[in-house]
Length: 620
Image (cartoon, rainbow, N blue to C red):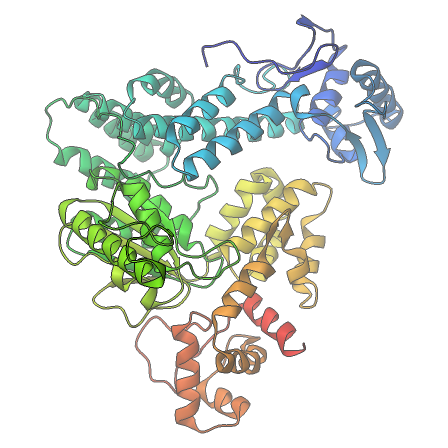
């Protein structure tokens, strides 16, 4: 945050900034924004660009306690002043601020508002990191951070409504800073992040990810004693302020640094282009799963287990958990961590040749034959392709035998997809995520992801819609997460949808989700659709399993079903019913008790949203 911000507004256009004090500039000259109440209205509109802002929200921002009888008329005056300041939008000369049934909507382009530009650069940076372009990611994330001039809207935070929006903006800035710092550390340039991280930790002492990045940057810069002191300060602060210990992930990071010894280390060199790429950045909304995360860190960190399978239905958060663990285990795998998607965008399985080619590119592995699919392969045709794939597979096994790396095989469709990829020797570990249990793989360590507990689901929802809105109607919030069946994807989509539809009461949205005929239609946010994800899992099932699931879905309402009820619904014998139910358990479509219990005493469940989808398909 030391370089001057990059201004991108075209000549003659007003450029607004919220990432600091509220300002407006025209061709480099700052414009007067009028009295405080007028600035509050403008700040509230700008903080929700291109989205209707209800009149009640504007009123609360300006008069939080006792609005005057003339409040609506006064708002019209302030909005009129904003129109004059903004001028027309685009080449068509449309009004900048329009009034409709949803409230006032401010039209503004990315190049005219720093928060829109910030979001665009941050998304581009994360996409670059996902492609393995760490240098490009660091540059884009740094460019986004250069727009951050201090606490957002710091001159108007005495208004509760503006303060809530400002807090949300600051949280976004902190998350991008964490992404940038972790990327610089991955690139072997930890020193550039140290001072900024220290300053931010002083302002946000309980933000764990910031503190972990600061510890890592100090450690990788050869300042191990200071890194360990950062953890000790945090441990004491947590005990004093909250009566808690640091998270298992933070403790694991500390132990990994202790294991290195107390001597100073030279900064880690930048990874060569042929080395493994870092996995994509963790989602900022990652919440819960403390037991499963602790188990992953312990199992993979000790070096005794080489293959771990994390299973759960579509949308259960398997990938997010795997990426979180991969980032926290950086020091345990000095030769890198790499993640490969095992499916294409349409959900179909990628071929082994495609997977091996990507692993080879990411890890610098080269076979002794031409790459798969190359028409110039010496053997020619399909035989050449097979020879090339076999050469890549042999080279991949050789690479694993010589390195200690963590390989994340994400969204594995079946056992056959991974058998040739698992290390037969050496110290590489493989973390597999899959919807089904992959019972045919052995020996492996298995972690099955259950639905989120109510508290975890509410925490995730609160991160997306704001703690204040959650506290305003906790009963409706609880109905929402339970209607989502505790499925992290569904809770996240609900939060994203409610973050845009800020006028929508939580109770009304909960009513929509409670309606079985409408729930899946409501769980859509932009291009993210819960129905689409569930449909992909449905396609993984065999035809017979789909029919069985359709019959059992109705039984699952009201607390699950027993084997006796399943036998009756399926119209078959007991042994056939047991096999049918257990086949769905293996596929991840039915859940069973965690402890040992007889088949007759067990109560089985179909996840609510999967059951709704099965009903839809049964009626097709």
